[in-house]
Length: 400
Image (cartoon, rainbow, N blue to C red; front, top):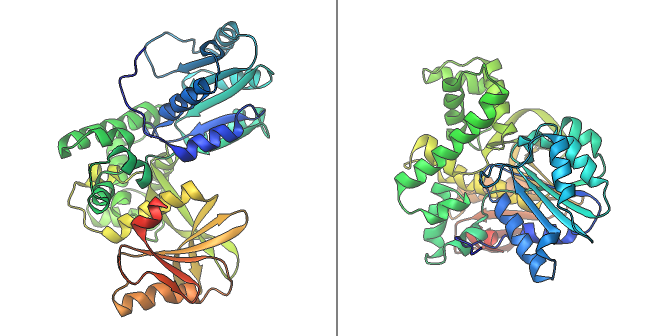
């Protein structure tokens, strides 16, 4: 059947899938609804076909599709899959598997078969918690998918200059379908549909007694305060200050639900000198800035915190762990860890002002090691190496 849409390349995800192909672990892909998990699997099936894998050795089931009434009970689904296997290796794709009752047992059963290479996706953070993690401990690998990176966004929208495109990315975010839309109202309607699908489909199902009006007020407050060091009590106080009283306990519940459904990230604080994580005063970032546009409107200002949000999610793509840094009394925007090696990152709109330059560089100079140190700005002049600190243009870094 002819495809009615164009798939944008997702090179990092494809490299990961190809690296784990035909290896024993179950491949688990997690990510926000509509961030592109199904499309990546479609791209990967195209790749398999191009390498000679027969169509009858690939079985793909999307449990949010109404095209076919797939079984949603564990035993029936297992028997359905086994009944469709062919001779040789079979590549089985179970998309949004959390809709299947006792899905953990299906995955465990298929993972034990030598003739199945299994790929599953899910749209909430705890798909790998509880029974599934117990059943397949040590037998799965996870890819955390995100909306389009700026590089992927540029591949989808080739008709704009990079600076114009980046301004659009800062406003509307990188949800893949947004690349097809051009007017504010259509973009807002689409993002509202995604947000409400998550809220109504996942949050209310798991938390039926939650006050949804207070939940959305909390989401709006967090969206307006991305990148600010805060705590649950400060969020509660802030909501009370704008006439929206929400208790600390309720704020904790709403924030946990946003994180659980991958709309929000909590970045812990890391004491660089003490080499330990701190339990208080974390920062929060949105998985996609488009939801800030939907919750708050277009005239948001605050470019500094928005570019910080973009960098945070990009670091999640490139590194294993990302924290907010503390060195003495000074703050380092991010400490990104990979293979046990930290990279220290400062993010600011510009360092052309001497005062701002000193403020951003001083914390990095105070770190007494020789690991990479970056200052990312929107400046097009003055970039280079300054005594071991690399100053880079943010857009160039995102595209690197």
